[in-house]
Amino acid sequence: MNKQRKKTSFFSQKIVRRLPLFTFLVVVLGLSQALAQGTEGDAAKGETLFKNNCASCHKVTAERSVGPGLKGITERRDVPWLVKWIHNPSAMIASGDEYAVKIYNEYNKVQMTSFPNLSEDDIKGILAYIEQANAAPAAQAEATGAPAAGGATAQAGAPSDLFILVLVALLVVMLLVLGVLLVIVTILSKAVGGETTEGSEGTFMTRLRTSLTKVAGNSVVRSATIWVFVLLVVKATIDGAFNVGVQQGYAPKQPIAFSHKLHAGDYKIDCNYCHTGASRSRSAHIPSANICMNCHGVIKKESPEIQKIYEAIENDRPIEWVRVHNLPDLAYFNHAQHVNVGGLQCQQCHGEIEKMEVVQQRSSLTMGWCIDCHRKTDVNTKGNAYYDNLVQLHGQENKGALKVADIGGLECSKCHY
Ligand code: HEC
Ligand code: HEC
Ligand code: HEC
Ligand code: HEC
Ligand code: HEC
Ligand code: HEC
Image 1: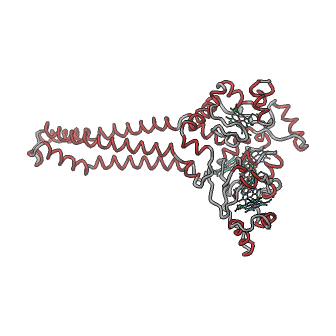
Image 2 (image 1 turned 45 degrees about the horizontal axis):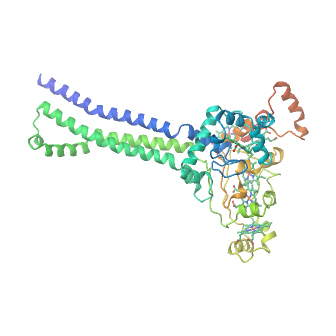
Image 3 (image 1 turned 180 degrees about the vertical axis):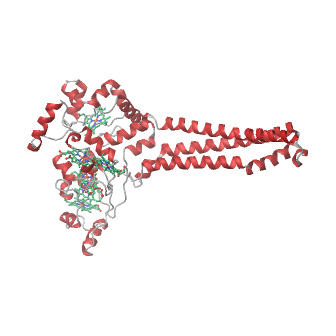
């Protein structure tokens, strides 16, 4: 009989001890879920969409680039107008919409890409991101693309770090609460059971103290801590795995302080003058020191930076530029196909290089980025006899414009060896 009682009390104690652990884990999981929703909701999705689709032509600030700065856009235009515009800007201009025609002329009749595949929610996400970026000064600095070195870390920055910080703080508080609860439970169960152990004769405070030491050594508390730690590590690993190899924002320091802003921006030297391969081969090529010497044989010879070019030539050693854009070997990309045949501007993929003091990778260069553009970009068929038959066939089947996707731009083998 006595034995029986001891057994049940042992079990009930075990359950009582485990209970806080379970509630605790459930609460933590629930909280992390809720937090994740809060910080990675619409605006975060909007940020990705913006960076992949709009950042090459728009800034989130008021600053003008290829297109207008989008700060305060939701005050200038209402959402239905924006959705219509983003889905099909050329249709809007053609329809004679006064505002559309005005900005079109103001931006030298540069045609904005149409995005028929973005849902209304996607667009609302982008708008939310624009508002958020303008509200947070840190995000704003990042979005203006200050080509500061270490852009890559800034990119990965604030929200997820903050998220983890908040989680950790919450955990500490929870652990404290759990500890106190356990102490009370032990004291109470002892009081009820009327057990007599060494501690029970002392004052309440000494009992509390011995209990606290016990709690610290308690295996439940320890395993809870370990589990929570494991959960955090797993989350961080999963988040990291999605970004392996993605170097958006990467802007390494170069061996010579060569500035595109100065050369391509201020002096308006054509990109093809230096990147001779861009319109006729797979690689755009980085210019050799000899090309620099065409000008620097006379210009600014005394500058220490220019002296580095001389040194390279004298030692017959190429300048060791740090590569910025780099696809993995498994992918095939051809500049001529895009620049020459496709008629794309360098800026559509590389951003405004002519404003960069230090080159920064603006696009994600992920497979999704390539595919996305192929889905929505019309093939440049004008004056290309090669496409005449194809256009005719396509026209008979459906009325939409011929997209890159329609000519095989989504076939694995086109981009993978
Ligand atoms: C190829 C460059 C390009 C891309 C990509 C682009 N836009 Fe534009 N956008 C423009 C240009 C240029 C204008 C100015 C009107 C014109 O010339 O057609 C414009 C105008 C706008 C306007 C009106 C701005 C104002 O101040 O009234 C909005 C809104 C807009 N774009 C949103 C977007 C969004 C959102 C995306 C991404 C989903 C995007 N654009 C992608 C070039 C682009
Ligand atoms: C005077 C020569 C010169 C001109 C003109 C020039 N570039 Fe460059 N470009 C360079 C050099 C040198 C590098 C390597 C150093 C660096 O990254 O800054 C480079 C690097 C780049 C890179 C990064 C390459 C990588 O490692 O991934 C891109 C992209 C690029 N240029 C695009 C352009 C575009 C677009 C233009 C025209 C708007 C242009 N360049 C005009 C000389 C030039
Ligand atoms: C078509 C002519 C031209 C070519 C080609 C050219 N540059 Fe320049 N570069 C200039 C001019 C013009 C300046 C501005 C000189 C001044 O500020 O007085 C300049 C300035 C510079 C400066 C700043 C020097 C200083 O101390 O202010 C550097 C560094 C530089 N160039 C590096 C290069 C490199 C590297 C290449 C080859 C990849 C190159 N340039 C190719 C015309 C050229
Ligand atoms: C359709 C998108 C796209 C366009 C348009 C484009 N590039 Fe690139 N560029 C890329 C990609 C992707 C890479 C990385 C290629 C790799 O790693 O194999 C790259 C790499 C480069 C590099 C590094 C050297 C190399 O070839 O790998 C330079 C320089 C460059 N681009 C310059 C230019 C210039 C100049 C133009 C315009 C004349 C241009 N690009 C147009 C997507 C583009
Ligand atoms: C800014 C839009 C854009 C981006 C980004 C882009 N492409 Fe393209 N791509 C095009 C266009 C436009 C064509 C059609 C050129 C033509 O008329 O042949 C094309 C054609 C191609 C083709 C030939 C398809 C065929 O069936 O003939 C390949 C391969 C290709 N792209 C690979 C890539 C890869 C790999 C990436 C990413 C690293 C990429 N593209 C990113 C616009 C883009
Ligand atoms: C328009 C070009 C393009 C097409 C079409 C394409 N890919 Fe890719 N793929 C890429 C690029 C670029 C990368 C490298 C992305 C990176 O480094 O993040 C890639 C990466 C991958 C990877 C490596 C994993 C990863 O995400 O980095 C796999 C696997 C893959 N592609 C499979 C496929 C399959 C299967 C298809 C056909 C259904 C396909 N790809 C079609 C461009 C393309």
